[in-house]
Amino acid sequence: MMNEFQYFLAQRGRRTELRKSLAMTLEPEELPGGNWLMTAERSWRSGYIVPVWNSEVARRTRAAGGFATWREFRQSTSAHGLWAQISPYGLASDAGVAVPRLLSMSYKNPNFEGKETEAKSVNISIRGVEHTYAEERNSIGSSKGPSNTKYVVASVLHVVFLLACYEYGSGWPWSEVISIAERQAAKIRSQLSDGSGLTTD
Image: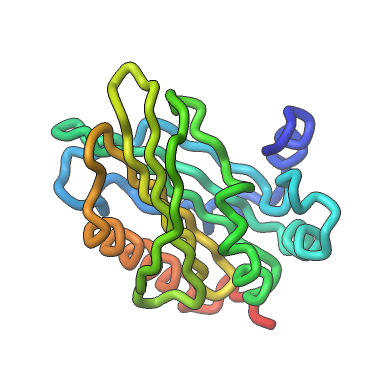
């Protein structure tokens, strides 16, 4: 994670790039079942996360000028919650390398309560992406009871997205999580289809 000074630096950049990333990020009305509210939103310049601070990948990412975005959503009629993160990279190959690593470098939900008790990788297939990593984690210790979170990280060209679908109780079915991931991938690809912001190797 970034410290406060790095986060301050990561707010500087072209607003047009921020708007591009926001346009790629899921909105409440695009989530299944209705009755979704966006409860939090963050953004920062891509490439300013500590684990890749001095790497060539981070240098190329910062030079590209893109913004990472993070949104949290809650469904008022269920125990479902979701957060989505978009992270543009300098090259498509850099995005592919980042996919299995992004969970350790992503924005941490400040509202998370409890302690993780189990984590396992899961093999899934998502249409419309180049690289995929999925993981399931269980947690205890929250005042709301045990929780289950299903993570999907995937790349579309030079953009990586991360979804965390969580619920206090048994958790979301993987079929629903995959459907949301495919919707997110399609939205990113649609935003990039006119060539704006397109970065290839």
